[in-house]
Image (tube, rainbow, N blue to C red; front, top):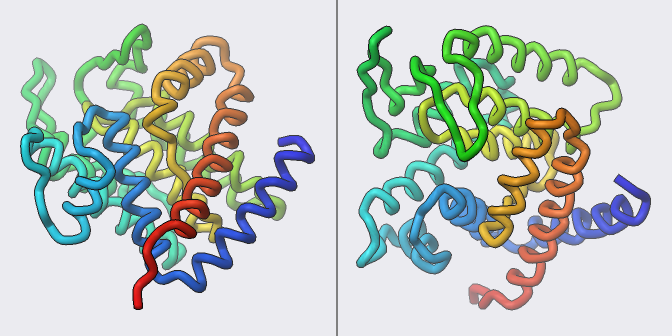
Length: 259
């Protein structure tokens, strides 16, 4: 992060935090925005207004796959859980991650029957199959338990440091988790939730990866996985953070106020 970015981010965070304290709806609408963009990246067809109506008044979107309504509903519940767990200073553990995954996939996950056994994606069980995403092949399922233990050890070691670079930790956990791809489905949503878990744990405002930047996001992740250089991914996520803060501040200013 260069000095200009640091200054811009510091000013935006201060402005956002001031609004957060004075505007009771900012938290709610920010969480709706996070859910909208995260599920849209994974294929949900609901518009942002339809997401708000679903989560605000329980009105399912018409002429949309009902599965997409369930995807949105489940993600929002998982996000609320993450926010509360971070507020309570609960540490990230394997059990926590599997619970978050189970919440994300509660109504859209299914059981898989494989030659080596059965597992249920809606219960946060690790995959027993190989997975691919585009050109990327992820680690053999037999390596997943050990890789997840290494991820938890990394988080614990970083959190023991006196000077924690919170943004770097959040982005690195996102990158490492999605590179493991421990579950058969929902890995992208869980990765972004874990990133926000860490941000919220250290009382940073959360962020979104914008739906409009989906292709750049996927390409940046792929390139980092291929060449081992995560700096472009960090820089991309930093730009997303700044973009999110600016968007939420602007929308809150234009949003009708309660009387």
